[in-house]
Amino acid sequence: MSQAPTDEGAKPAEATQAPFVLIVSGLSGSGKSVALKTLEDLDYYCVDNLPIELLPDFIRSLMREDVLPQKVAVGIDVRNRHSDLSRLSLWRAAVGRLGLDAKLVFFDSEDAVLLRRYSDTRRRHPLSHTGLSLPEAIARERQVTQPLRLEADLVIDTSQLNVHQLRRRVVGEFAFDSRDAPSLLFESFAYRRGVPADADFVFDARVLPNPHWQPELRPLTGRDAPVREYLEAQDDVQRYVRQVSEFLDTWLPRLRGETRSYVTVAFGCTGGKHRSVFLTERLAEHARTQGWDQVATFHRELD
Image (tube, rainbow, N blue to C red; front, side, top):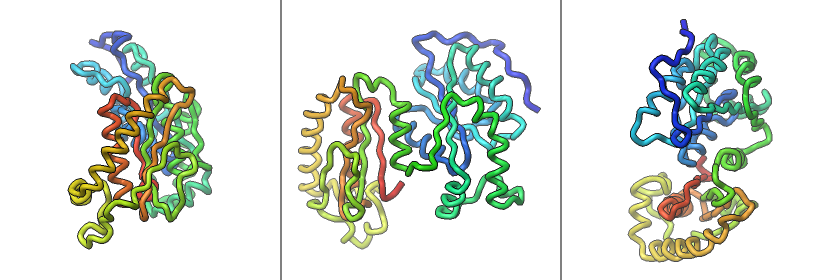
């Protein structure tokens, strides 16, 4: 049985050192995993499926570290013991007594949408092991997580959002300091499925050597080391990366101080699997080395 949270031996965190703590919860299939991955891209220290009673101890352990992460995201959902979920307010209060403010965001979606998503992905619902049908498992989960939804500081309904739109929503809500420096979203796409309508900069990678025509590379993606090594060995690719880097280094800083909260830089190729993915990851990493703190990636044909 869970014990009541105490603060024995804990010292309040100094205001200048205290991280921002975001609790991520919601229904299975509503986009929690996408949200956590996006937050990780935004330099949050992310932990998923943390037992809820360990939340204060987890924060205490971080506060003892020499280098304290400034942004922390913790995934808590129906995989916890159900009796504990209704006690979240107690654990949040314990975190508050450490000098931190733990915000709770809850991701929700309509039942019909959740059913379709599970049908498309063929994933098992976390409660399916109890012998419930999928509709019954969703109904049971909605009942169990209702206390979290009622307590949430922000509820995001993803029923009408695709993965790309959800990532943008998370970036817009939780990427800080956007008043001075907008968040950057680097995206890969396939031209055969159309150019992203909301991209600010679009670069065509179809002029570069295509790993698709290398039999051993065809089943891989631009995230895989053999594809990266193949592309990095091409002179045209090196020149392309250098020239695009110079362009972005020149013009992205002009956007600092603008009212926009994020900017999308898109790379397209034929299938959205090799060249565009490689360039997205490569240029996102380059942006981080140039001092952009809020940088995320999205691969439309893979994610």
